[in-house]
Length: 156
Image (cartoon, rainbow, N blue to C red):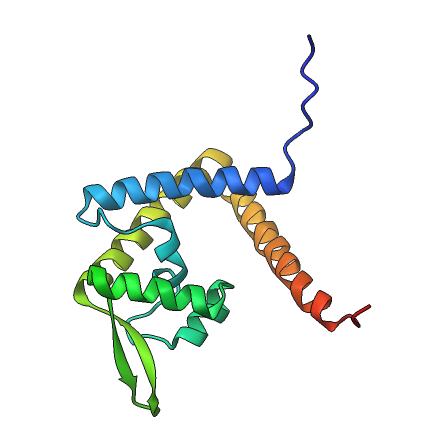
């Protein structure tokens, strides 16, 4: 009986790659003192800087719906990773600001991801890895534009 499975498509490849990176990242974070952080928390923590950001900004940066970001922020507040603070530019708005514990997680996660990237760069060579990453960034931008194009089309 032959193997008639098709070659993996881009969705399968990127999904498999993402899960493998997340497995390594979150297992390592757990060993480094962050056992409660989960992949879904990345849609906030990965896009947060020291000064914080509004939930709408995090939604735009991550591509997640604002309601999903709000739910994740609630979880992160409970876990001690972020707090909600008044926005000094507009007191009616709230900023999501990382706590010291949150900053530690962000710093560690970035270091772990940098090590993963260095390992892949060493395996492929700097030139091939740089080309791969540039192509992946372009494809990601093109795919994210799909929604904008779809919204601009007249309804039937």
